[in-house]
Image 1 (cartoon, rainbow, N blue to C red):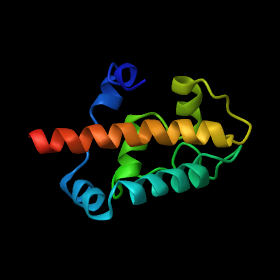
Image 2 (cartoon, rainbow, N blue to C red):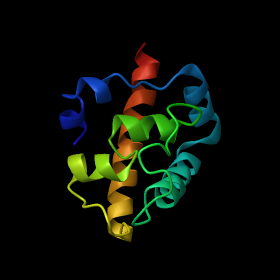
Image 3 (cartoon, helix red, strand yellow):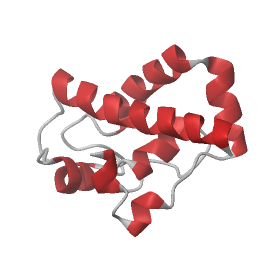
Length: 116
């Protein structure tokens, strides 16, 4: 999925900034992963999320940046890229899969940062 997302010029342009990298390193992977689950459940989990399409900021938290990079930022992107239709709440398995993709992207960004 990450390789497929990198073919999109829009998705491929996202990178964690210094603040998001510092935050992720300070908090640790377990806390960031918990945040990923919580933010996805609250912001895109419902059948009709509030402000859908505009509810995910572009920066300020590693998960927000990752959501845009992984097309988990709104239900329209989730439907298009992940094949999960709009109109019904995300299941636990769907949320887990999306959180795993978000975390894989964050892990790759943090690894790339050590190489820069």
